[in-house]
Image (cartoon, rainbow, N blue to C red):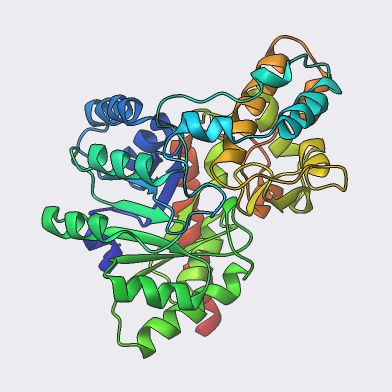
Length: 377
């Protein structure tokens, strides 16, 4: 395929695979798609290790990195300069609530042990900038940012190095702001998406963003994101003006993914209605598989979700503890197993390899395009 986004990123087939797992990134890129490593969970040193491994195994295929440099900081945490200070700001009530909730499912943890963090890890500006510096030291063909306007430092560095900058948006006005800031690719992500997302559906958002950019005189390619799990969906979004698809949830059910067997089993069993858009994991609205964790934190007895990044300092260690409990034989803890996943989870029927997913996307895409051609004959 030859369109602007393919030429910008050197990808063969514009299927972009966002994943926190380096194995998925490599497998997708080598299969002709474009793997994008989500950097949020890593410290800068850890990200360096991950990218060095990718460079050694990807055989020259193009790949990218997704970092998060939040544009706005909640006033409650604006004065906290590091993770040690942030940890101290998490109240005893939040610690006790978390420990009590885990205890209901057979996980014994002291309230003072609830909060854990490692170095500069987390969704903070300082970690995002440090990750960005690491990413630019590698032969990436794309760098992406979400949670606001891509920072000027990222755009300037990208242009200097010939690395396209992508930005995720959930509304047309956000796309126009990103275009004015100088980004190279817009990822328009509908509310069906896993992780941080807005409220507008993908089917409405894509043509709205494409039209708005065209009317503004902006020749910026758009990638469609949110609920896209098949090649036919990808073809449909490209029919509305997108130049490719940005996907995430579909890779969670692959053999290479970082997800646990317990979560993959839940994905296969889940319906599209089994996700929830909640602040109870990161502090900002993010779609994930709904469990008793979300019902409790979003319920009347909750002390309330903490602002980003404090909520992640409570939730991420908790979900790691939950997964360890399941591996240790605690069947009760399975009820709490969750991860970021979109409404497209209802289309997951089996676990496949990442290479097989790329192959199936290609075949379904071609079939859908040819099918439309026959209709018009």
